[in-house]
Amino acid sequence: MEGKSSNLLSEQQRLETKLSKMLQDVKPPEKDGLLMQCIYRIPPRLRETNPKAYTPRIVSIGPFHKTIDVGKEDSIFESMEKLKLKYLKGFLNRTLLPVENIVVLLKNMEDKIRSCYGAPIKHDSHDFLKMILIDACFMIELFLRSHSYKDWEGKDPLLLKPWMQRDIKKDLILLENQLPFFVLEQIYNLTSINKEFPSFLEITFKYFNTFCLGTVCTKESPKHFTDLLRSSAISSSKLDRRRTNEDKVIHVYSASQLREAGLKFEVSSNKGLLDLTYFDKGVLSMSRLNIDDDTEMVFRNIIAFEHCHLLDTRIITQYVLILDSLINTEKDVNLLVDKKIIVNLMGDANATAAMFNNLCTNVNVPDSSCGYISVCNSLNAFYENPRNKYRAIFVHEYFNTPWKIASTSAAIILLLLTLIQTICSMISLF
Image (cartoon, rainbow, N blue to C red):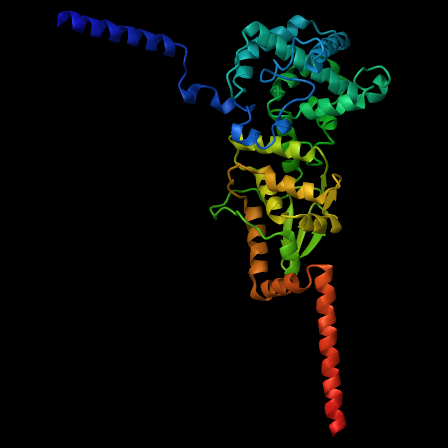
């Protein structure tokens, strides 16, 4: 019995020792830098809807995609890694900044940088800091050359290839493909070029201007480039973004249904994309939205950021959910195109409708802002007003296709002629 007890005791001690070693470097979740996290792996349930919308095609930035095809001589990623070194050399030559100064800066911020990533980073300190330094200086130099395009036209290897410029720009706004913005900003501020050029925030906004959902550059530094696009849209908006205790809005009638009920659609003079305004006379004012082949990718990555991050309001997700309700079929798309609210550069109305119907698949419905709650409730109330609802039913049943319009018109004309003939016959009797 004593031998059995001693064996049980030694087994317990081994387990306790093993657990103690496992927990030695583990931090409690509330002390694990959670509030610093802003760069995330796309959750599987979002990625499965369209993996290509979240995956870099030509250049990997940061730790999440650093191993993609690197090491293969014929890989585009391998070629970009070599090009990054050339841009690093160009940046150092331009600024005369000793590389040691950047290393010291990054070393002092290493823990802060690591805490920005919402998934484990396997790189050791040496490889991690080297990666951050090369990627950061590559992007800063790229932005500077794009800012002074005329000085580099015909010389820069990327500016000679518009397709590469476009693909790189798209890769740089992917949520998984980010560096913290403060890293780039602090390296930029180490140099004296900020006396010659605008702030790094202004240069960055100019570089991504074609992708920005707003016309105003945010006044505060964003967390990264994905956040810059989101912040620009919010900064350009006048929508009341306060949270409300009212129920979530999960349904709005489609654009064609609302039109059949008598609602009028107008293009807003306000350039804030997120602004939707309902007027009491039955008018919905919306800002113009340009839709092209990159629209889905931009929206998906911003929505993924809002889905993962601790934000007060997921305003872009709310906006897209409302568009998803307004747009069910190509008929809805064509209606908004006719009203100049949508500029459909994709050309295919069916593809545009399908895109909006799938954008928020597997995304939790967020709490709505006061502005959107008011607009949605007003739209639903307008449609559900008995007079408008029966008007919509009548229009849908008898006037929603050219054939129905023709047949209904013919029937009305025939009815009128019959009525006139009857009246004439009665008059002749007297």
